[in-house]
Amino acid sequence: METKIRRLQNNLVTIGTGIIVFSVWSIIKTVFSTTLFRAEMLEDPGEYDLVVIALTWIITLVDCLLHCFIGFSARAEGNGKRKSVFYLIVTGLVLCLYIPLVAAECTTLFHITESVLKFLFTLFIDITSVVMMAELFVSAVSIRVLKRRRKRREAQA
Image 1 (cartoon, rainbow, N blue to C red):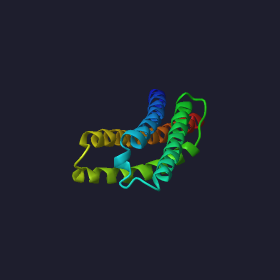
Image 2 (cartoon, one colour):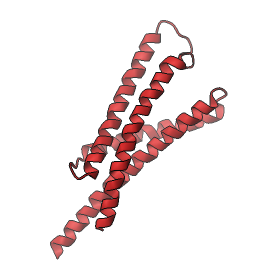
Image 3 (tube, rainbow, N blue to C red):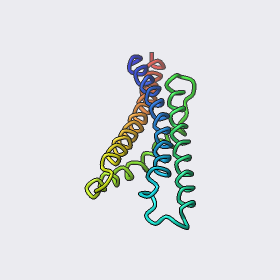
């Protein structure tokens, strides 16, 4: 049981680091969207150009902060420094938002005609991000269950 707990804690550290790195991906993706692919982002550039870009950056920063919070909290729990239920709730909420978004992204795959490689690359990274969040959630819950079982066994002995 101790080996499994330690392995799951190592998973939390590794996955937490990956989620922090994926927050950097969100910023890179937004930089590309607002600079290089600006024409694709805005079908009719004009009056609302600045508002759309500002909202895009605000959403990206909130997303980045959520990813960093989840990643750093997972790393802390994996290292045994801090245990918080709040980051698991946030992770569950982010998963509830991301899964439908990635599913919608998958359905547009059949209708895309331009920039297929860019789209596939983005889709791959988004799917990987969702899988990592789900793995983090499962690992954190499993650690809690195993530790609770260990305490019960120790109390009975």
